[in-house]
Image (tube, one colour):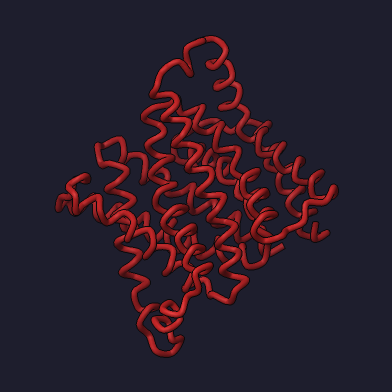
Length: 304
């Protein structure tokens, strides 16, 4: 069950970056600045992958086939850069509870794309246990779901403004980007790319697509050392450690099971908030996490 363990640990890293990332946003640092700077640091850290002679890294990337280029663009440009920006900006237009509700569609997107691009079969056994996992994930997020549905029915004008549709569109872009990144990351792993090579290509593609932001003056840049230091902390925690653990898990699991196991992230985020901020953790969320864990373990053990 090592694969599931790696994804859970990766989800924990992503949950732990919340106490750093969200205070930065609340202090006025834009999402564009945070995401671009992360990709800048990570591209520089992985630069040796492209030039070292031992692994013929540069030569290997020069010889990428069109399908491999497309996979790196899906993982880096779309999944790492644009999806993260879209998800963050969705909160400006839509109630956060509705953004989180839409994010629950990510495993469904990943399962569909895995069947389409990786030919991962969708048999009845997998479907049954996938529903178990999805049920666990929904129970984990039951507070946001109940709140979101109540607001949807009681306000009556939730979807009446153009901003609401912008928020929905941005949230769905993020869902599609992250679901696709899981599938095409698995594709690159199956084609023989190492974890380090996938991460290097991911962050370089993301950096290139984000580069027009500072060049066109669409992003603030300053020399505040505390901001740079905090962003570098995010790089080490979620960009390096979190993504390394994630790709270690992805090597061992199907893309569809990986996406289902990622549903541990909101549970672990609640645990982190419980420990750090005193937020409450109820028995329903613990029960949902147990259901999700059991369902994931059955799928991996039975190879559904």
